Image (cartoon, rainbow, N blue to C red; front, side):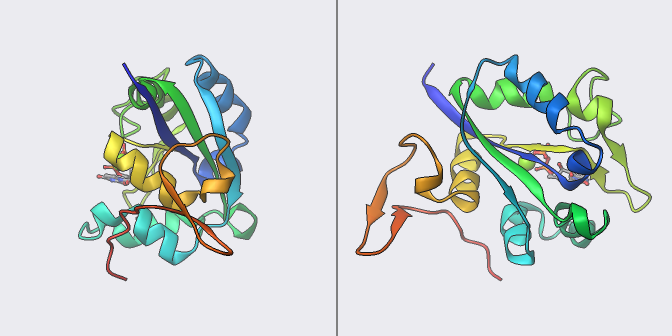
Amino acid sequence: MKKQQTLVLIKPDGLKKSLTGNILTKLSETRLRIVGAKVVCVNEELAKKHYQHLTDKPFFEELKNYIMGKIHGKEYQRVLALVYQGENAITKVRELAGATNPEEAVSTSIRGAYGRITTKGVYENVIHTSGTLTEAEREIKLWFRPEEITTNLYPIVKTKDKIKWETSYDNVKL
Ligand code: UDP
Ligand code: MG
């Protein structure tokens, strides 16, 4: 199996509950390599683009508020974004994360152990992980610039003053 990469986000509730250490320790069981990491304040544009596949859902507004940290107080308006690389990275990380609905997730998985459903019905499930190769590529290119990744993941173009991903899949209408 070829090397894959996957985007992991520790969402605002994960940071608020001081779960970063636990989650990174758990993910280290995969023996995957971290090739990018940063703390990000998520603005509306990034939230919309990240969750573009859910724009039509009734919970979309609440979901945006969640990933932007709006329900967690000003000091928690941030997420920790990481890129993991290695064999079968997408499945390995998703297995440890657990099912989307924290009440259905295996209780020893990250979402099963730490997630909850809010009173407004949003699955506050602590962690995001890419679901497919296409999703991973789109999401990594959305969250990271080429020079923030320690290895060559995807083709880039260099202009006089900028390095950009050669292709992006940023097709959401804002
Ligand atoms: N979500 C939700 N209710 C749903 C489906 C999704 O609150 O019925 C939220 C949840 O936080 C989830 C995110 O929207 O992690 C993205 O949904 P997706 O279907 O992509 O699930 P994931 O890939 O995160 O498991
Ligand atoms: Mg998803």
